Image (cartoon, rainbow, N blue to C red; front, top):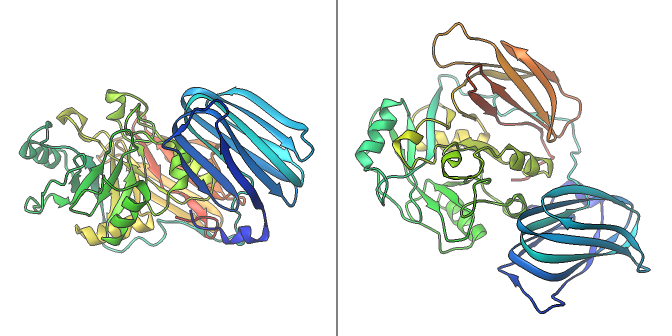
Length: 423
């Protein structure tokens, strides 16, 4: 994560970071990430004790986020005199804040067969200006919304390529990537006027979160997470973190995603996950990252394994033409939406007011939708009608979701304070 410039005003020193296992057990494949305002630790299994020592030069609200697949954590905070100022036991999945005065503190964490991660953050990124960015404010003239999915499987035990491509044409997709696990499938000769094929691979090592590497023609699954993301960027591609809330293999802990830089976004909706196990909705992870100053965009993909998965979640990318270069430019700017069936009419920022309207892709008398405005991780307004609006009031970001009468949803990229975020 890049250092947030505004935080230079807050000088906080980590005096020491020590790990000890009092009962001789080990942290297995532990990954630690430290900045001047946060500590993140993720591991396959943690038994024993670990100590984090903080020195705060002024009083701060320290935010803790614990994510668990199994097991629990105990947490005790002691001041410099050895007095217990906070304690919490048998923690599984929880977020909580502790107000601490200036001084030195020891945070003692005991793991009991814990599989997961924790994040400690004591200074949230802040903006030094009030200028908001609307990704949809500068859509190129003459562009169009391209129906796209970057997560489809074919061959290698899945449906034949011809069948998969024909099904995408029949369901009116404009752009897809065949992103098989850990192997590049060459579709460069299969592009037609109707369907643009872009190269891609799903990064899917055993016991690891999965990533979609789009725009590259080789697999980087033998690399570590950050090295693989960097390599994709070097080659002109982009990375989407796949199905964060899937069960078991392929899922991501939000704290793990917080450690990584340089990826474009996450799958906020992948409905195939509901068939395979877990939750296909990951707006909780999205808001977790946005609240902490990491600008990531929300994608929708099928994750197609069988033909019945097709068209359940996808992206609509506003592109000047049907080329990889134009699509990549639009994605870099956030000029796309994730959807399960609704289309954008507009999202405008007029002064300090967000105005938004959605529609169905066909002519229909159904034109009433439920709009939800989410600001800094909380639903701040729910409106029902043909359109909706929300007046900004200093929020770090506001994003909009809309739901149609048949349950179809659409997820817009956030409107956000210009200098409150890093990639």
